Image (cartoon, rainbow, N blue to C red):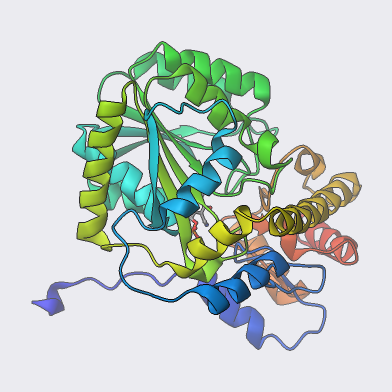
Length: 391
Ligand code: PMP
């Protein structure tokens, strides 16, 4: 039986890590994998998380099973940060913990499929796993262009999608810090999107994986909250893996908003059944650490300060890139307006290869860079390398 399986391509970004590690050049630059890095190239554990973990070590007296919904204290503690103070408190909004944002996306799309969604409109390029999960869940992905060539959101394409979509369709949107383009909707654009969705039967699915890494926790939730305020039904997939630095601990959450507490309860019962069939229950440790942080004012402040310094570092590198004048054939000014860790550069595969071979700059073949892989000290070296291969 098993010899009928086709070989699958390895994860290109993970292969890139190995190549980068083996490169002896001292001034090599890693812009590949999507984790935050300090100016020293480290991805440290947040001090607030370390503090919370210590409290868990001291106080946790059982690791017995939780249910498929995971740690509901974690979910409830996160809600004001994600949905704000205006969120419905009448049972129309409810959620559960998931194994990372990936588990949340999986659950959202599997639930959409169970509720008879057949097509999911999706701006491209997108996080590659979106298309893979859609295919695996058995939903048809319908692509539209997310960004214009001058690095803004392609609102005309989105308007056309919403004018032509109908019952049985869903729209998958990135809440902030779009991966891979960094091109986010402005607040005015989100207001328009919320209005269009309010008049449409299309089910919005918002993937918020980088809250706090763009302009701030509230600012980065603007779109989600604008849509939630206007539409009856909404699915939300959330990741704490970037904004709490918990990547391998797999911390995520999933929420349903519907027009009635009764429908939300039914939707959550279906999500719980899907979770049981997929992973039974999410891993506890990271979510418990986030709960401890969010229930303690001192740890919350410490986490917010740490998140702010990450955001400011990303912003400083973006500003420096945008201000650099000679990047050969590449205009870097849009990167100053874009948000989060990622940006797409208009480079082809040969130029990506030359950046690696001639300059020790490692980036995805698609042209995506992780801005957090740069420091204010090596931006000029990177820009010169880019000028060399594109000039
Ligand atoms: N959504 C998007 C857009 C992402 O970029 C990512 C992470 N790369 C995720 C979801 C999932 O994050 P995780 O499973 O690591 O929490």
